[in-house]
Length: 265
Image 1 (tube, one colour):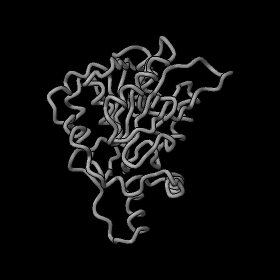
Image 2 (cartoon, one colour):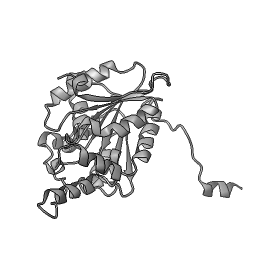
Image 3 (cartoon, rainbow, N blue to C red):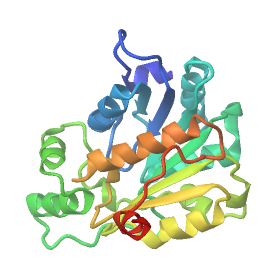
């Protein structure tokens, strides 16, 4: 299966600015690439191409690497290419970089809602299907628009969030090679994530040589599709803009606080 056959893509308007970069996104448990339409459209408005694959946690890493490699090869020259992932997709993205399968080379990593082998949603309060689904929705997102979309999505894998994280993916976080990741990494995590504790992301960020961690206040697990999705997308765009200047991620703007301005008077 080629990347083109299993990928959802959002591109800037043809009469708009030149492409500023490419983001390739791997979804998490139960998801498919189409659930990231809102995120893809938002970044496309800022002249970034977004590809979201229909991959799953059970896919062979080699097959995912091949699909990602095709998209990397087709990216616009001279602009950053970022590999992103949410939930188990974030583990896959990290595993691909560490394994260096197929020669996939990217300029940065975006890791969202990192889980580990011990993380899943608490048991639902009832065995009834709707009660269990409401419980999963509450763990995933507090955004009513996204909840409605997931509830109407016949291709969404309900109940998958409680599936165990595959051991070969969970092992990535405890392996000895996190310190070898040479590219800049932005980690995003919900501050109230009941699926994967934010301390997982903090621990990984501490081991990565070039990492930044952004935590959303009271955020749930599906950070890119949570109630603060606009703020999160803006944070991603700002990070991408800094990445365009090189791996040092030099600041592009300096904000002086009201308190400091008052003291200067």
